[in-house]
Image 1: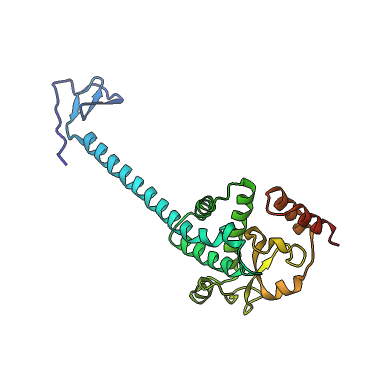
Image 2: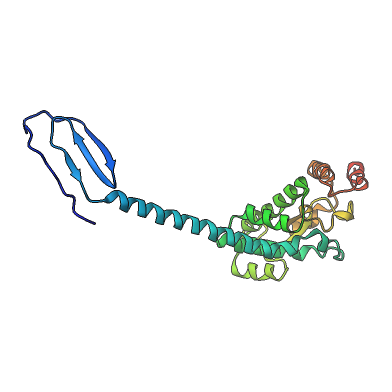
Length: 246
Protein backbone atom coordinates (compact mmCIF):
# COMPACT_ATOMS: atom_id res chain seq x y z
CA UNK A 1 0.00 0.00 0.00
CA UNK A 2 1.35 3.45 -0.92
CA UNK A 3 2.20 5.88 1.81
CA UNK A 4 -0.22 8.81 2.13
CA UNK A 5 1.02 11.92 0.34
CA UNK A 6 0.15 15.20 2.02
CA UNK A 7 -0.16 18.33 -0.09
CA UNK A 8 -0.44 21.59 1.82
CA UNK A 9 -0.93 25.17 0.79
CA UNK A 10 0.13 28.36 2.49
CA UNK A 11 -2.36 29.34 5.11
CA UNK A 12 -2.56 31.09 8.39
CA UNK A 13 -1.66 28.31 10.83
CA UNK A 14 -3.22 30.27 13.67
CA UNK A 15 -6.73 29.89 12.27
CA UNK A 16 -9.13 28.06 14.57
CA UNK A 17 -9.72 24.35 13.84
CA UNK A 18 -12.84 23.31 12.00
CA UNK A 19 -14.75 20.10 11.44
CA UNK A 20 -13.33 18.03 8.57
CA UNK A 21 -15.36 17.15 5.47
CA UNK A 22 -14.31 13.98 3.67
CA UNK A 23 -15.05 13.57 -0.03
CA UNK A 24 -13.91 11.08 -2.68
CA UNK A 25 -12.66 11.74 -6.22
CA UNK A 26 -11.31 9.18 -8.66
CA UNK A 27 -10.19 6.79 -5.99
CA UNK A 28 -8.59 9.51 -3.84
CA UNK A 29 -9.81 10.70 -0.49
CA UNK A 30 -9.80 14.47 -0.10
CA UNK A 31 -10.18 15.88 3.38
CA UNK A 32 -11.23 19.56 3.43
CA UNK A 33 -10.96 21.76 6.47
CA UNK A 34 -12.38 25.23 6.53
CA UNK A 35 -9.77 27.84 7.41
CA UNK A 36 -7.03 25.16 7.27
CA UNK A 37 -4.76 23.53 4.66
CA UNK A 38 -6.28 21.14 2.14
CA UNK A 39 -4.98 17.64 2.81
CA UNK A 40 -5.04 15.17 -0.03
CA UNK A 41 -4.64 11.49 0.81
CA UNK A 42 -3.45 9.99 -2.46
CA UNK A 43 -2.97 6.43 -1.29
CA UNK A 44 -5.63 4.99 -3.55
CA UNK A 45 -7.11 3.10 -0.64
CA UNK A 46 -10.62 3.38 -2.10
CA UNK A 47 -9.63 1.11 -4.97
CA UNK A 48 -8.11 -1.35 -2.49
CA UNK A 49 -11.30 -1.29 -0.43
CA UNK A 50 -13.36 -2.09 -3.52
CA UNK A 51 -11.12 -5.03 -4.33
CA UNK A 52 -11.46 -6.38 -0.81
CA UNK A 53 -15.24 -6.05 -0.92
CA UNK A 54 -15.36 -7.93 -4.22
CA UNK A 55 -13.21 -10.73 -2.76
CA UNK A 56 -15.45 -10.95 0.32
CA UNK A 57 -18.52 -11.11 -1.92
CA UNK A 58 -17.10 -14.02 -3.92
CA UNK A 59 -16.15 -15.83 -0.70
CA UNK A 60 -19.66 -15.34 0.67
CA UNK A 61 -21.23 -16.65 -2.53
CA UNK A 62 -18.88 -19.64 -2.41
CA UNK A 63 -19.96 -20.46 1.15
CA UNK A 64 -23.65 -20.25 0.19
CA UNK A 65 -23.00 -22.58 -2.75
CA UNK A 66 -21.05 -25.00 -0.53
CA UNK A 67 -23.81 -25.24 2.10
CA UNK A 68 -26.44 -25.60 -0.61
CA UNK A 69 -24.47 -28.54 -1.99
CA UNK A 70 -24.29 -30.18 1.45
CA UNK A 71 -28.05 -29.79 1.90
CA UNK A 72 -28.74 -31.42 -1.45
CA UNK A 73 -26.26 -34.26 -0.86
CA UNK A 74 -27.93 -35.33 2.37
CA UNK A 75 -31.41 -34.81 0.98
CA UNK A 76 -30.50 -37.30 -1.75
CA UNK A 77 -29.57 -39.87 0.91
CA UNK A 78 -32.78 -39.37 2.87
CA UNK A 79 -35.26 -39.16 -0.01
CA UNK A 80 -35.35 -42.91 -0.90
CA UNK A 81 -35.98 -43.73 2.75
CA UNK A 82 -39.08 -41.51 3.05
CA UNK A 83 -40.53 -41.95 -0.44
CA UNK A 84 -44.25 -42.76 0.09
CA UNK A 85 -44.34 -44.88 -3.07
CA UNK A 86 -41.55 -47.12 -1.76
CA UNK A 87 -42.93 -47.17 1.78
CA UNK A 88 -46.26 -48.44 0.46
CA UNK A 89 -44.59 -51.61 -0.86
CA UNK A 90 -43.10 -52.62 2.50
CA UNK A 91 -44.31 -55.40 4.73
CA UNK A 92 -45.70 -54.83 8.22
CA UNK A 93 -43.49 -52.62 10.43
CA UNK A 94 -40.69 -52.58 7.85
CA UNK A 95 -40.64 -48.80 7.84
CA UNK A 96 -39.09 -48.80 11.31
CA UNK A 97 -35.50 -49.49 10.13
CA UNK A 98 -35.87 -46.63 7.66
CA UNK A 99 -36.69 -44.24 10.49
CA UNK A 100 -33.43 -45.25 12.20
CA UNK A 101 -31.48 -44.67 8.98
CA UNK A 102 -33.05 -41.26 8.48
CA UNK A 103 -32.00 -40.38 12.02
CA UNK A 104 -28.43 -41.37 11.19
CA UNK A 105 -28.26 -39.27 8.00
CA UNK A 106 -29.82 -36.23 9.62
CA UNK A 107 -27.24 -36.34 12.39
CA UNK A 108 -24.45 -36.67 9.82
CA UNK A 109 -25.94 -33.69 7.98
CA UNK A 110 -26.01 -31.65 11.19
CA UNK A 111 -22.33 -32.42 11.82
CA UNK A 112 -21.52 -31.23 8.30
CA UNK A 113 -23.22 -27.89 9.13
CA UNK A 114 -26.15 -28.61 6.81
CA UNK A 115 -29.47 -26.88 7.49
CA UNK A 116 -31.71 -29.73 8.59
CA UNK A 117 -35.06 -28.07 7.78
CA UNK A 118 -33.81 -27.37 4.24
CA UNK A 119 -32.43 -30.90 3.89
CA UNK A 120 -35.85 -32.32 4.74
CA UNK A 121 -37.65 -29.83 2.48
CA UNK A 122 -35.47 -30.80 -0.49
CA UNK A 123 -35.96 -34.52 0.21
CA UNK A 124 -39.75 -34.18 0.46
CA UNK A 125 -39.93 -32.19 -2.74
CA UNK A 126 -37.79 -34.72 -4.59
CA UNK A 127 -40.16 -37.57 -3.70
CA UNK A 128 -43.16 -35.62 -4.94
CA UNK A 129 -44.84 -34.79 -1.64
CA UNK A 130 -46.74 -31.77 -2.93
CA UNK A 131 -49.43 -31.74 -0.25
CA UNK A 132 -48.26 -28.88 1.98
CA UNK A 133 -49.91 -30.20 5.15
CA UNK A 134 -48.56 -33.73 4.64
CA UNK A 135 -45.07 -32.34 4.03
CA UNK A 136 -45.32 -30.15 7.13
CA UNK A 137 -46.34 -33.07 9.35
CA UNK A 138 -43.64 -35.34 7.92
CA UNK A 139 -40.96 -32.71 8.31
CA UNK A 140 -41.95 -32.05 11.92
CA UNK A 141 -41.76 -35.77 12.73
CA UNK A 142 -38.31 -36.24 11.16
CA UNK A 143 -36.83 -33.22 12.94
CA UNK A 144 -38.48 -34.21 16.22
CA UNK A 145 -36.94 -37.69 15.98
CA UNK A 146 -33.51 -36.14 15.52
CA UNK A 147 -34.02 -34.14 18.71
CA UNK A 148 -35.31 -37.17 20.64
CA UNK A 149 -32.34 -39.34 19.62
CA UNK A 150 -29.94 -36.60 20.67
CA UNK A 151 -31.55 -36.22 24.10
CA UNK A 152 -31.46 -40.00 24.59
CA UNK A 153 -27.71 -39.97 23.94
CA UNK A 154 -27.93 -42.25 20.91
CA UNK A 155 -25.60 -40.26 18.67
CA UNK A 156 -22.33 -41.68 19.94
CA UNK A 157 -20.20 -43.71 17.52
CA UNK A 158 -21.76 -47.01 18.60
CA UNK A 159 -25.31 -45.72 18.34
CA UNK A 160 -24.74 -44.14 14.94
CA UNK A 161 -23.27 -47.40 13.69
CA UNK A 162 -26.44 -49.22 14.70
CA UNK A 163 -28.76 -46.60 13.23
CA UNK A 164 -26.95 -46.59 9.91
CA UNK A 165 -27.85 -50.28 9.60
CA UNK A 166 -31.47 -49.61 10.56
CA UNK A 167 -31.05 -51.10 14.03
CA UNK A 168 -32.15 -49.72 17.39
CA UNK A 169 -29.29 -48.03 19.30
CA UNK A 170 -28.86 -48.19 23.05
CA UNK A 171 -30.14 -45.26 25.09
CA UNK A 172 -27.16 -43.65 26.85
CA UNK A 173 -28.82 -40.75 28.68
CA UNK A 174 -31.80 -40.22 30.96
CA UNK A 175 -33.92 -42.56 33.10
CA UNK A 176 -34.14 -45.16 30.32
CA UNK A 177 -30.39 -45.57 30.02
CA UNK A 178 -29.53 -49.07 28.78
CA UNK A 179 -32.86 -49.48 27.01
CA UNK A 180 -33.24 -49.65 23.23
CA UNK A 181 -34.48 -46.68 21.24
CA UNK A 182 -37.39 -48.23 19.39
CA UNK A 183 -39.74 -46.80 16.76
CA UNK A 184 -43.25 -46.20 18.04
CA UNK A 185 -46.51 -45.76 16.12
CA UNK A 186 -47.93 -42.58 17.67
CA UNK A 187 -51.42 -43.67 16.63
CA UNK A 188 -51.21 -47.39 17.46
CA UNK A 189 -50.88 -49.92 14.65
CA UNK A 190 -53.63 -52.04 16.18
CA UNK A 191 -56.06 -49.12 15.91
CA UNK A 192 -55.15 -47.84 12.44
CA UNK A 193 -52.92 -50.27 10.50
CA UNK A 194 -52.94 -48.00 7.44
CA UNK A 195 -50.56 -45.61 9.25
CA UNK A 196 -47.92 -48.33 9.61
CA UNK A 197 -45.66 -46.81 6.95
CA UNK A 198 -46.53 -43.12 7.36
CA UNK A 199 -43.38 -41.30 8.48
CA UNK A 200 -45.37 -38.60 10.26
CA UNK A 201 -46.78 -41.30 12.58
CA UNK A 202 -43.44 -42.86 13.53
CA UNK A 203 -41.49 -41.62 16.53
CA UNK A 204 -38.42 -42.67 18.53
CA UNK A 205 -39.28 -43.95 22.00
CA UNK A 206 -37.44 -46.01 24.62
CA UNK A 207 -38.62 -49.61 24.32
CA UNK A 208 -40.05 -49.81 27.85
CA UNK A 209 -42.14 -46.69 27.27
CA UNK A 210 -43.32 -48.11 23.98
CA UNK A 211 -44.38 -51.37 25.60
CA UNK A 212 -46.24 -49.64 28.45
CA UNK A 213 -48.12 -47.39 26.04
CA UNK A 214 -50.03 -50.31 24.45
CA UNK A 215 -52.98 -49.17 22.29
CA UNK A 216 -54.07 -46.17 24.31
CA UNK A 217 -55.65 -43.24 22.51
CA UNK A 218 -55.09 -39.87 24.16
CA UNK A 219 -55.88 -36.34 23.12
CA UNK A 220 -52.58 -36.21 21.25
CA UNK A 221 -53.55 -39.15 19.06
CA UNK A 222 -57.01 -37.77 18.43
CA UNK A 223 -55.64 -34.37 17.43
CA UNK A 224 -53.00 -35.93 15.22
CA UNK A 225 -55.58 -38.15 13.51
CA UNK A 226 -57.58 -35.06 12.56
CA UNK A 227 -54.45 -33.47 11.09
CA UNK A 228 -53.55 -36.64 9.20
CA UNK A 229 -57.05 -36.80 7.73
CA UNK A 230 -56.92 -33.17 6.54
CA UNK A 231 -53.47 -33.81 5.03
CA UNK A 232 -54.67 -36.87 3.12
CA UNK A 233 -52.53 -39.25 5.20
CA UNK A 234 -55.49 -40.97 6.88
CA UNK A 235 -58.73 -42.29 5.44
CA UNK A 236 -62.18 -41.43 6.74
CA UNK A 237 -62.47 -44.97 8.11
CA UNK A 238 -59.17 -44.59 9.93
CA UNK A 239 -60.26 -41.30 11.44
CA UNK A 240 -63.51 -42.91 12.63
CA UNK A 241 -61.54 -45.74 14.26
CA UNK A 242 -59.58 -43.20 16.31
CA UNK A 243 -62.65 -41.13 17.18
CA UNK A 244 -64.59 -44.18 18.33
CA UNK A 245 -61.75 -45.66 20.37
CA UNK A 246 -62.49 -45.49 24.10
